[in-house]
Image 1 (cartoon, rainbow, N blue to C red):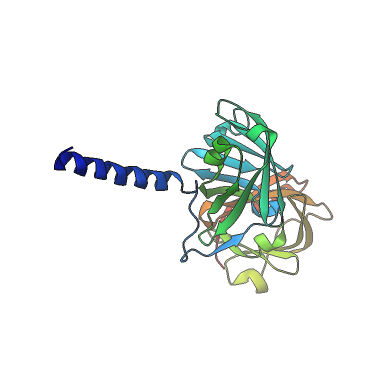
Image 2 (tube, rainbow, N blue to C red):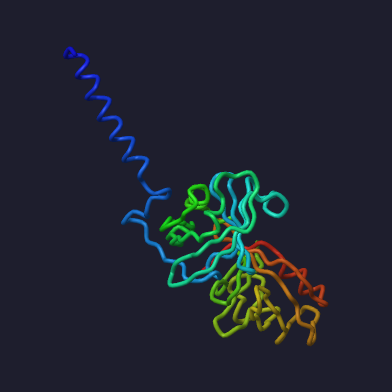
Length: 255
């Protein structure tokens, strides 16, 4: 073999070594030192819809997640439905049903993943161990938030606004509505108690000024945490139509 043949063989060996190292890397790289993150320990921290490109995943309260190409396919045409649970800061997943994907279930064995909430609000799923390479390839990614359903007061405490209408959720379980940021304490037009039960926010009137009273009627709402730090309040049921009309909006975060 001449000098050129030896050189070509050497280059080929080097390239193959690089490819082998690349293939051996985990499906999702760990967060860099500059990326602060919190390790997820409970389902409540991830319940909602997330996306990586056009791949969407929705974690539901019933302990299942759905994956689909496109958000509108999550309900009727998911390509993966699996059960999930958290134990000792590790997410365990087990296949329930799949559509058109290779090696989906790992022979009925569980996969194990670390789930991280990154500083910027993204969700990172990191492979620990999974007998299903197909499932690991689909699941281990970094996802951006589409929407989350709030399940606790801590997720909404603060001030929110749409135009000149302001809402302030306080740690004591009260929410104040006012026209203008400065009127929240001195001149709120409504003060309610709020609490969460099974992903539903319950509102009950304390006092109103200049708007019709809702009396003892309680309202039920879903609160969604949206991309970009916004908050959406969605009516589920409220016999007080004036309150429902006032609060069901998409709000920007103030503080």
